Image 1 (tube, rainbow, N blue to C red):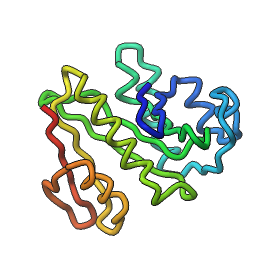
Image 2: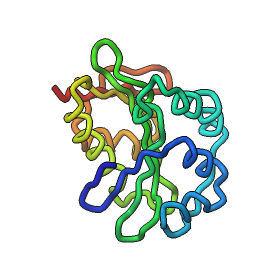
Image 3: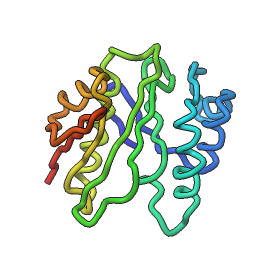
Image 4: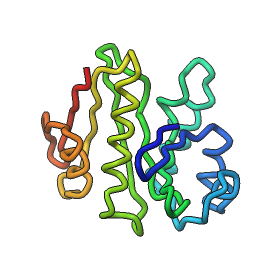
Amino acid sequence: MIETERLILNPLNYYQLLKYIKADSSLEIELNLHETSRTISPELKEAFEQTILPNVADSTKDFLYSTLWTVISKEANKMVGDICIIGEPNSDGEIEIGYGTYEEFRKKGFMTEAVGGMITWAKSQPKIFSIVASTEKGNIGSFTILLKNDFLKIGETQTLFNWKLKIK
């Protein structure tokens, strides 16, 4: 678990991920949180089925590098978004992150703070030396989060900007 000024980042175990994907408030009940309106996009559902759940179920892997970390507002006692690490550090000590803020909680600085919390945690992990992320070119809010956390743009494709933060 990671704690920041306003947030708690809670890594979900396999059974909590199954409740998350149901989106029936069973996860909120287990975590003693107020209900949050959230939807599971087809892309996230596919990621759950093909990558997240199989990797979290694999006991040879550290689940913290594969699971969804739910972002919880302490004040509202609600889930406001999610952040994940996309796999264990590679041979260069690099991890990739992805994140999303639920619509009603956008533009409040929650994800900027959550990414900052993840950076602080990553700095304490001996195998992590840098963090990368990709954002859609048109998603100004998403890449502003990275800019506020000192990521540098390292490249782009036709549709994406690629970002990196060296932490060691």
